[in-house]
Image (cartoon, rainbow, N blue to C red):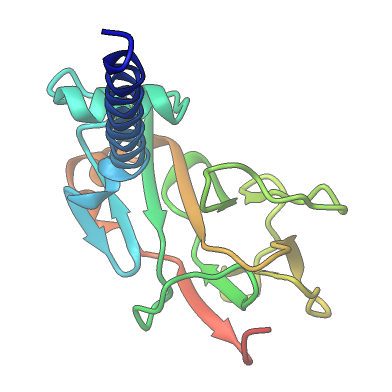
Length: 202
C-alpha cells in the first residue's frame, strides 16, 4: 500500500496543476474578451472610430455590461454621453505608441468633448507634461475651425502633445457629453477626427 502512495500523490498533484492551468487560461481569456468585447462588434464605425451604442443602454447585453464594469467605464445613456474608440489610423494600420500621429478635426457637436490616449492595457500613459487628453475647453482652433494635436514619443514643435512612451499598442477614446440631438439620432453623422501617422515609427 505504501508503494502506491507516492504514485497516487503524483496523480493528484498533476491533476491539480492541470486544473489550475486550465482555470488560469479560462479566466485570462474571459478577461481579454471583457477588455475588448465592447469594441469587437461595433454598432457604428465612422472613419477609424468605432462605437458600441449599447454601452449605457437598457438594451445592453450581459457581455457589454460586464465589459463596462471591468473597464471601469461610466457608461451613461446616449443622450448624456457617446463614446467612440480608435485602435487604427486612417490607413487601417494599428496604432502604436512608438509612432507619432496628428489628430485633427472639427469640434464634435456636443456640450463638451475630449480625446484621450490610452495604452493597450486601458491605463493612461506616463506623461511628464501631464497632458493625457485634449478637450473642448483647451483646444485651439485654426482659422478654418479645426483643432489639431499630436501623440507620440517625441514632441512635435508647435502642437499640443500627448506623450505615449514605450513600444506597445494604444487607442484613442473620443467622449461626447450631451451630444447634439441630431448626432444622438444618427451617430454615423459624426465628422470623424483624422488620425494620420507622421514620419517613421521609432
